[in-house]
Image 1: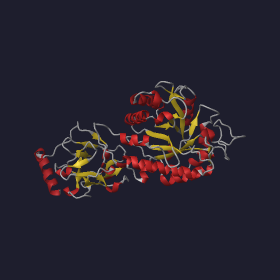
Image 2: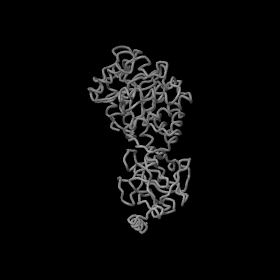
Image 3: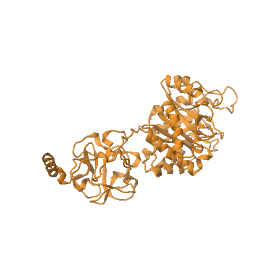
Image 4: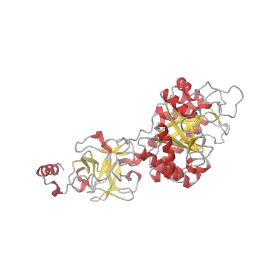
Length: 460
C-alpha cells in the first residue's frame, strides 16, 4: 500500500493520476452522514487525516469526520480521503481505515437496496465489530449475514447533516408535566426556585377539530395563559417541551389526513416558540389505528429533517412487562430514531403492589423492545428509553410514593435513561383534606414539590 501511495503521489505531481483510475469526488455526489446500528454515525477517529486512522462508530455530531461523499466512482470519501480495507485484506475481521484515495479495489464499495455496503472484490460487507454500537467500535469487513450491524443508511443528496444531540441531557431530561387546563396550576417559577428543575413538559396541544394546533383544542398558541407560562419559565432560565396528545380531546394525528399536514401542524408550534424539543403523548384509542401510527412516524421524520437538532420524545402506555411494540416497530422499519421512547408505568390495576419495582420491570421490557426493533445493545436501548410516572394516587388507585421515585431515580441513574418525567407538577403538593379528583394534589404524604425535587437530582 505504501509503495502504491508513493507512486500515486508522483503521478499526481505529473498530472497523470486520472490514467491510474483515481478520480476526484464530484460536487454532484451525495454527501452526508452514514448511520448504522444504534443510530450511530460512521466516524473518522479524532477527525484525523493521517493514513491508517481508524474508521469507527460514534454519536452523530455533524462534524466533517462524519460527512461521507458517496462517489459515482464507488468510493466513500471524507476529509479528502477514502474508506479503505487495510492492506487490501480479504479475511473476515480485516479493519477499515482512512487512506489516500488510490483507485484500488480496497476502496470500492457498492450499496445494495437491502442497505448493505459491499466491497465487490471480496464480496464482504461493511460490518460493525462485535455487533455493538458503542462509541469507538471499529468497522471491518465480514461475510454478509444480513445482521443489523451490517445495515447502513447512506446520504441520497448533497446535504449538510444535522447535529444530533446526545440522547441523555440531564437538565432537559427532567421535565415534569404542567397543565393549565384544569384546577389550580402552580407557578412554575416557584417550583424552579424550590427544586432546581429547569424544564417542564407543557400539556397538551390538540386539534380544534381540524388540522390546526391549539392548547387543549381551544386556547390559541400565542397570547394566552400557555404563552405566559412559557415566558415565565424562560425568563427564569428554563424551557419547555410542548406535549401533543394526552388522553382526552381531538388529536392532531387523527384530524390531519396526511403526514405532511401533521408535520405542518407540529411545525406551527415549533415556530411559535422556537422549540428545542417536542413530546408526542400517545395514550388514546385513536393511536391504535395503524394508519394513524404510520402518519405519526412519517410526520416525525419530516420534523427531524426540517429542524436539525430538535429532540423528539414519544410517550406511550405500557403493561407491567413492557409496551405494545407496534409503533416502535413501525418507527424502526421506517428509519425513525427518536431521542426517547418514554413509557407511562401506571394504571396497571396494581393497587397494593410496589410501583417502583413495577416501573423498573416495565422499563426493562421497553429496553428489550428497542433492542429487538433497532438492533441496539442494552446500553444504547436504555439511553433511548424514558419513564413518565404518575405521582401519588393513580387513576387505578395505585400509590406511587416519594420513596418509589427514589427507586426510579436510582434505576435511571444506573442505566442513563434519556428522559425522567411525571404527571404532574400540578399534583406535587400535599392535599389539605381528603384526596380530591381534580389533579391539584397527590393524595400521599409529602411536602410541596417532593416528587419534582427527587427527579431534579438526576444527572444522566
